[in-house]
Image (tube, rainbow, N blue to C red; front, side, top):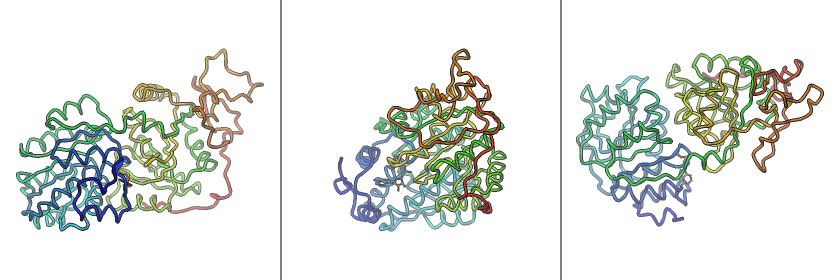
Amino acid sequence: MKTFAELDLIAPVQRALADEKYETPTPIQAQTIPAALLRRDVLGCAQTGTGKTAAFALPILNQLGQHNRKAAPNRPFVLALAPTRELAIQIGESFATYGRHLRLRQALVYGGVSQGNQVRALNRGAHILVATPGRLLDLMNQGHIKLDQLDVFVLDEADRMLDMGFLPDLKRIISQLPDQRQSLFFSATMPPKIVDLTHRLLRDPVSVNVTPESTTLEKIEQRVLFVERRGKQALLRTILDTDDVERALVFTKTKRAANMLAEQLVRGGIRATAIHGNKSQAARQRALEAFRRKQVQVLVATDVAARGIDIDRITHVVNYDLPVEPEAYVHRIGRTGRAGAEGIALSFCCAGERRELRAIEQLIGQKVPVDPNQPAPQPREQRPSPSSGERRAGDSHRPSGKKPRSHRPATPGAVDAAGAAAKPKESRRPRRKGRNRGQRVKQTT
Ligand code: AMP
């Protein structure tokens, strides 16, 4: 593997990398940067956590630094489009970090806040514009943004953008791009609609597929826990109490469920907060910061809000509700196991979610192992009789060579795959450990 010093990057960019103590490019960087420096279009199949932001930011900064042009008001040279405000902010931070020794200006444009500051930043002239689609189109329609000087277009997390219903906006934006441009396209998954979009957008792209999903998923210990719907909360609390959970990102299906769960956890003495689209931008940033600083142990999120969360060392991802879209499972569990770290992804599956589980297993091409502390799915006639309750059939589903992480007490509300309650009633009450008792912490948002 080459070092950054061997890549053809200008001195101010190299200095910023040295400041960050980056020595070796990640695989996506090693392949994307040389191609992008040659002004080739790039089609990158990669998730967050692979270093993809620097993969596109570094060659862009390199080009801007070499040409040293002045940015005209409202006419950026670079447009990076992201599905969420959080991701846009993170991309902006990356440009600022890697471009700190260059004299460049950037503007950030996203909804949920007033447009005044954004318009002023555009009027002053910004080399780089990082934007979410809705606000971008809004400001384009008002005449605050013209894309006729654009050199480079970046589309990040394209699949998520489509999931969020941005395709019509995206088509409108693409129709305004100048013909002469470089396009860098990134997506974690490549469903047919994305492939179609790449044909519209890219010209003879260099394909970079450094993280086939199976490889990324291999680092993550996945387990499914069969549970009655009403037993999910107690099960989560048991896990938080007994497993070695430093930072858990918990996914619910709805914003309301995210709020309720966070409130209930807080009431039970667990440091938790919720993040979702109904919260103000400031509240979302506060929640993320508290999670990043470990002031809260549990961040309860919906898919949309969690997109683009860039926090290292999330030890556990818990699918409290299974996602309706199987692709979201890959995105969700990709939040743990980042930068080579190991992570644990636990999926709660109640009787009504079997179809979702099957769809996920089909997508990832493997069975999600049953948690070793759970009874395994097995045909009715083979199920152990009550007197043979010691047997843990789920052990046979343990990933090879991997031990279960904990000896969790009997799982509350657990059901086997056939939907039958599997635990005696008294074991349904979660065991509380001393460290959390009475540790009532106010929700931060
Ligand atoms: P990303 O996939 O862009 O969200 O990056 C994931 C994380 O990896 C970020 O926290 C980056 O700061 C970090 N990172 C990116 N490239 C490198 C590198 N070459 N060496 C070390 N860390 C990196």
